[in-house]
Image 1 (spheres, one colour):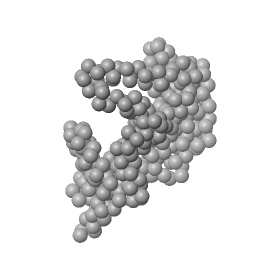
Image 2 (image 1 turned 90 degrees about the vertical axis):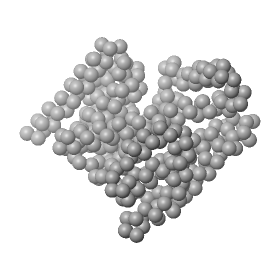
Image 3 (image 1 turned 45 degrees about the vertical axis):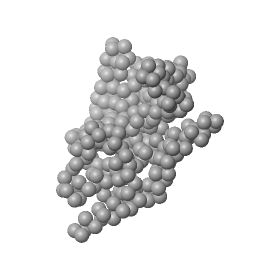
Image 4 (image 1 turned 180 degrees about the vertical axis):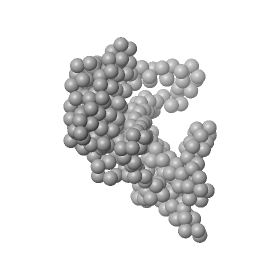
Length: 309
């Protein structure tokens, strides 16, 4: 009886995948770059309910259907969805909490999007660097008409290239978050598994990470010294943006923890809205608060408050 239910559920999920792919053909393959998200969710639901081995079997069925009904983009993105789904199930089977599962998915999708965009798609005629050049020309024309091009022309090309790469990373980040949210909701909704919660307060941030992130931010003020070395220039800008992102994330975590422990409520949405309204000044505040939280002072303050001090 159990094997019958397993086969029925597997066949139903494959039928759903096949039906969506037929609709994708009818709509001119508009969903090609999103199908891999459905692959991941199907594998997570099925393999969590049964076993990781069953997940591999379902993944094999997805590969066959994709080869029969998909397009080139489907073939390219298919491995990313399958790997993300199987990795998530592996984490669940090893009792990882939501925070670690989310981090794992974000890393997988960020690396996957970078590899696909920078290495795989150029083999099929989609050149990322040519698109960046078109973007550079458009931005230069806009800034030139505004009369401010001369002020930043020396570093503009490098900045646009790094920002374009970070946009790819951000896309992977959002895909990882989306898969995680869908997986936790559907697993709970279908009463398959309730993933263990990880409280942000339990997340220990190494002080060294805060100092390294701040040091990377200061590299932004040294980019002019690397004009004759393009590689060093790209590295300095990239590290500066990465350090800023880490500090902003730490600052956001502080306000989340502060709200839950000191105020007794979730203020994450309010902080997000304020950061959006007060942009870009909010980024500086979040970076400073993030550094103080990651390096220790604000962390110690939160610990005192949690003990009623």
